Amino acid sequence: MNALSRTLTAAVVLSLAACGSSEQVRSGADAKAAPKADSQPMAGMGDTNSSPSAAMIAQVELHLKTLDGKTGDQLKALLPEHRQLTANLIASLSDEMRKMNMPADAAWTTVVDSLRQDLVRFPEMSPAELTTAMAAHRGRVTRLIAMHRSMIAKMGM
Figure 1 (cartoon, one colour):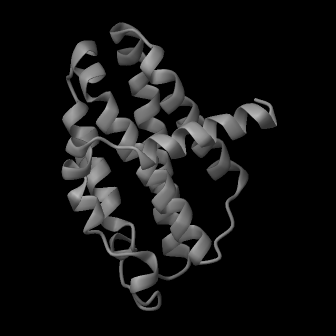
Figure 2: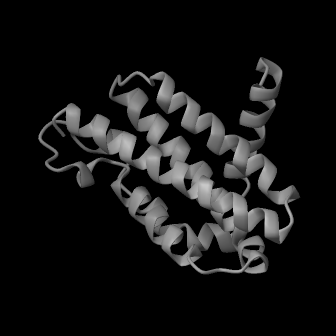
């Protein structure tokens, strides 16, 4: 993917994250209740579930469970919410890493780029294609969360 394509993909994802419907805003209320990265002390936070983005991660993990067993048409219907949650997760985890001066390595960047590509391609997919693609996408989302937890744990948080 060339630089222009990456820039356009990032712009689309960020636009989607900023432009949720009122229903998405209401359903995302729990995410908004998540503590802000700059509103809590970083030192001595305890286990990896107490990072500033822990509430966002929990919301995404719960959402992923709700996708289990859904038909392609049901996944299509849930796609706007899923795209919003995934874009918010990427933004939240990336912001938290920046604030804690944690550099993104090649593996992190690759997973984030792949997730952003998924979010751009999903609306154009048929229900059957979406069902197939969702399994790999879900794996990338859970890998990103696991990578973040590992980095937080290494920082002693």
